[in-house]
Image (cartoon, rainbow, N blue to C red; front, side, top):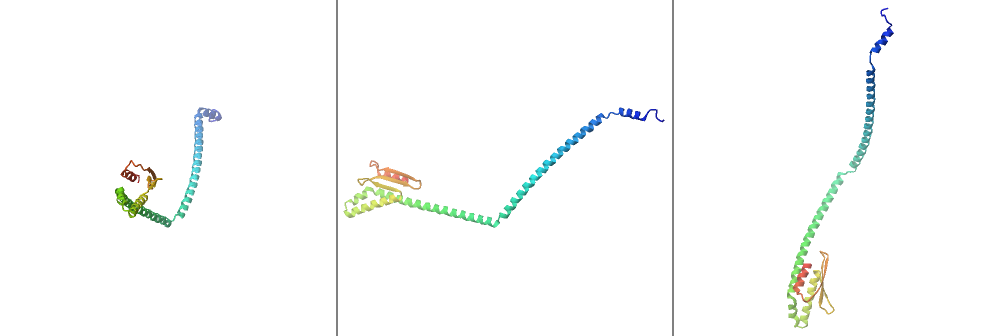
Length: 203
């Protein structure tokens, strides 16, 4: 025989001289790591697929909405609406200008009426005394003057009321612009000019 010992014995001794336990442990750890990585990869793939399906549904919804809006939008209708709004804007501007002009006209008319009323106030009792002795014609002139005063007062929003004795005892001043109403009881201790100034301030 070439060998003095049995080959199987030599093989057993050779195997015993090799320390393969650390290698087996390393291979086991590598296998576990590979398994863990594979599980993590599968999880990320499933999450990516779920996210992709969700994004696909969102894309389909947005595409449908976009198509609907595109089909319903009409450039002709849009231009017509812009034209209508421009026309309405010009009409409102013209109406505002007309109102401003009318306000100025009414203010001028009011100033003219105020001047006329002040003129009548300045005539006052003197004019009545001057015509009191003329007879029936003179009395008619006085009545016409009183009626004219009352008419001017009323046009300005001033109403004068008589008491039971026929004397002017109360004045109602209405300011339609402010929505105010003032009731003034006439006191003979105050002059005509005092009441005239008070009335103008109320107006």
